[in-house]
Length: 166
Image (cartoon, rainbow, N blue to C red):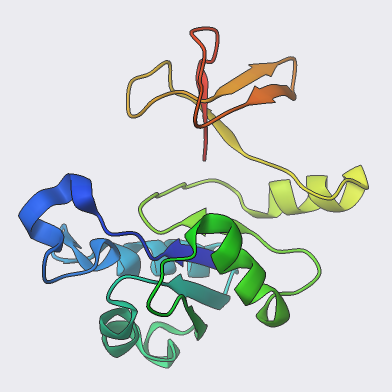
């Protein structure tokens, strides 16, 4: 499991000036802790945190994961933020043949074993979960029809896109 927690969190303004976005408290504890506890409940206990902005603070906060009953490894962007593709490429040696990628600011309470089984059965190189968003939470960027992704475009979304990558 790769968790992308390297962004600047600019939309959160002053909250993220001294605290990484994934460590902002929600319901009494850092969001990342909620995320890790969710993943552990779904038997996902080997995590690689792709950490960028203030990554050392994230490592100090959760360490190797033992206290949370998971195993955590880290890949740090370095002085230049690598973005999603760069962070994942750097993390590949620490991930298995099949792995999940989760944004560090999303909470997806699903049965993770179902997409894992679908991925194994598909013979495809990748599988994306999508959420019916209709522009509610963020800009919808996926045209999804009859169980298939028809088009995905984060930079140039169109009005017929009702789902979002999740």
